[in-house]
Length: 216
View (cartoon, rainbow, N blue to C red):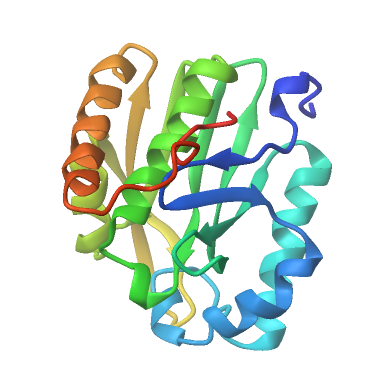
């Protein structure tokens, strides 16, 4: 069943460092440039670093939105004013009030920065406070230690491992580790993320008063 509730439609989520806008074909050219490093997609089941690969990434993302099972975003770094990656809500279920956050990639220069923390905060806030979901899940390659540490850092709970879950582009059989945050977890996770972001903001020059106001 597709998503019919108005709240599940495309939305822009605006933060201090990052703005998440609905993905469109107009973003294909800049994201093809930003995603040219094959290492970005080493844990994905397919490679998207070529022009053909990035077109396939867009086709999949936009098809998910058309079917009502996904909400893909382009990641805009406000420091540059341009696209630097993509993320999405996937596996949306209206009846069970759950979604997955994933399909996320960032240009290498923005990895390990405050962008990922703020991006997750904006998406989780939208999920729990606007869409009224009761569960948000994440999955990652069991060998992707960076991703696993990042999920624990934001407060996600490890639930278990799906063995032999995927075959990645190299032919390796991937085990996927699942994590989740529930609506009951959200108040604590929200406070934690806001504390992490406040530490980052404290070391920066002030931004205009309108920065950081979410639209989701």
